[in-house]
Length: 104
Image 1 (tube, one colour):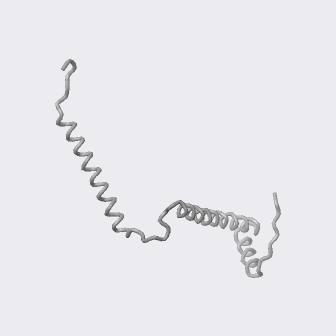
Image 2 (spheres, one colour):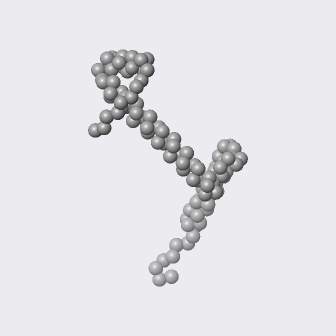
Image 3 (cartoon, helix red, strand yellow):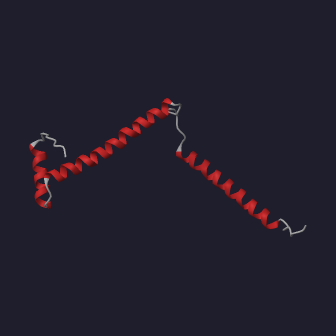
């Protein structure tokens, strides 16, 4: 396991000491937890930023005007309605179609 040395302000050290004393955990436990959580957040943020830049470089929309949410919701609601209507028509057509008997 690697060792890392860092300097922190007296205020941060006091806060870590207080948390360690009140919880029975070590200051090292808290620092590792904070680093782990912070790295998770930073990795997500940085990777999303890189992915966005790649998206824009490959022809994505970038900072062009966007579609208002209400218009987008209306579009998808219309798509859903059309899908439901087509499904009902298909089901109705199957029910009204005369069945074929073997040998016909």
